[in-house]
Image 1 (tube, one colour):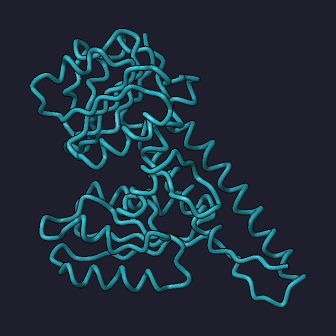
Image 2 (spheres, rainbow, N blue to C red):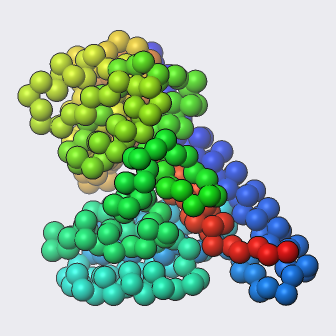
Length: 304
């Protein structure tokens, strides 16, 4: 029996740290203000969320983000847009939020309707307010060096990538010299995650969900990471014995949520495995909040 990685528990630990840091940051700003004539912006971090259309899963996910953000001390501002909103109107909302001094961070809930150009919309976000870290400028900076979150103004780690690293850290797994297979239908996602893992010494193969030789690639991987949105298509014969399996893929059918991995079929083959739900999902939200906090801290100007 594999060891199931409890994403909810890990997420709660991350959120507890965020709460503590928000309080400490506010206290620091408040104390500094008493010794300065410079007006300081303390308060709580502010996250703007843009939700387009009426997808049930997206609406539920945004609702969860709002609820959890409130718990950790982050204020949210939801911009709910109709399915038929024009691309121009979405870009106008983003432009407004880019200029709004109250807003520390902007999040676009994906997927967007087919009539909208996702790449163009993400590119319109001010890189300094890009929570997900997928703005081309942020990805370029992230891929140019091995960066972690820092207050120095460097690139933010996209939350889902940070989750992968946090999961490996939680099980004390050293990926240097290990074989890693990343399955993704997005070249940007696969190549960017590959770069981050290679910076840590891993040997990475990036595959697509429809690769004819996929089984040959996955069955050799010490760490298998899948993010394609194909329910339960990873079977035990595709998984190396005692591998670490990280399931990022999420598909909703009716009221049930499925991962890319057939959990019941694979759980006795893998050494560690993330469940769906309760694995990567809660951690991704927590890591997004961590990015919000980082962007909030960068905007605080403290002058004694």
